[in-house]
Each structure stands twice: as C-alpha cells, then as structure tokens.
Length: 216
Image (cartoon, rainbow, N blue to C red):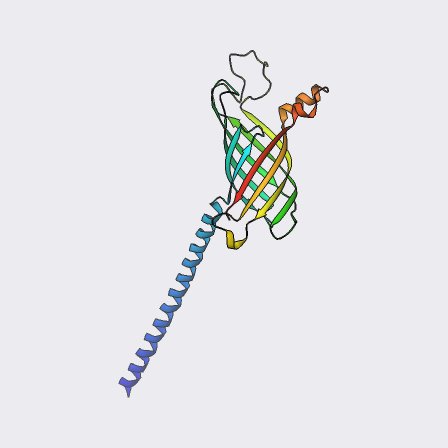
C-alpha cells in the first residue's frame, strides 16, 4: 500500500513538474515572439516607403530622394535628397544634399483612382558640397564681409499634389504615383525682399516640379 502511494505521489509530482516546465516554456516563447515582433516592427519602419524625383527648388537641377510617411493619416513626410548642379550652371559639377519635412493637412478623394492634396507645406535644409562654400565666414574675407552661410540654406514651401492610386489588379511594385508642384523661398531671398522692396515675386520665389512613387 505504501509503495502504491509513493508511486502515485511520484507520478503526481512528476506531472506537476512537467506542467510547470510547459508553462515556463510557453511564457518564454511568447516573450521571444513579442521581441521578434518588436524588432520586425522597428525594421519595417526604417524601410523607405517611396522615392521622389524633383526638379529645381534650390536643391539642384535634379534631385533624387526617398523617405517615410507617418502619422494618423500619413500626413507627415520626411525626405532625404541628393541632387546635382551641372557645369553649365556653375564652373564645376556640384552635389547637393537636402533634408526635407512635409506636412499634408488633408486629402480630397476625387474618385476611386485619383485624390487631391489641396495643400502641401513644409521646410527643408539643403547644402552644397565643395570647398567654395562655408558655414562660417572664410578667413580670406574681411570680418563681416559675409553675414550669412553660403553652404546652408533654410527653405519653406507651399504646393499641391494629385495622386493616381493604381488599382490592386494592376500593381507590380508601386501602389500610387503622385505629381506635385511647390513654390519655395529661403531666408536669404526673404531678407533681400525686405531690404529691396522693388523685387518682384519671380526674384525671390522659385517653382519646382516633382514626382513621387509610393511602394508601401
């Protein structure tokens, strides 16, 4: 009788131990899966969601970029661009870099295929690579000769967009194609306008055109 009881007690404890190990294993797997899901979410958020091509806009003759949209209705965008200024515009071929922040307050659905962004606005900073440009005044110039940086420009813009949403049956890699235009200026142009009232809008405002291809 005692042997039977011991055998039963041994089996009961073994079963409890097995159940405890199973619970710990499931808990560990769940925590591990949550960690994997978190890393996957972070990695996915780092993948650019679109590419852009922009003509003019104080960013170079042509600029090629990529970026991310986010927010409740994807109303925010952050872009990075590399552009170029050809030799016929300057003495040497030059490369530009631009960091751009866009805000699109609302969207108007025209039909199942097209939508309109009545307002797109934002700010961007761009620079030109090369020894001929500087952030602080070069030593070869008298103190106060240049009161501004020739390497960095801060720009603001307003514009509009129209988007073609590609039907799901016709999508290969892109989900949508957007055409946009922007009217922009920078701090140097605005200061010149304030100091020289005779300047007209074409002297301190610039028009740029662009194309955005959305992948995600």
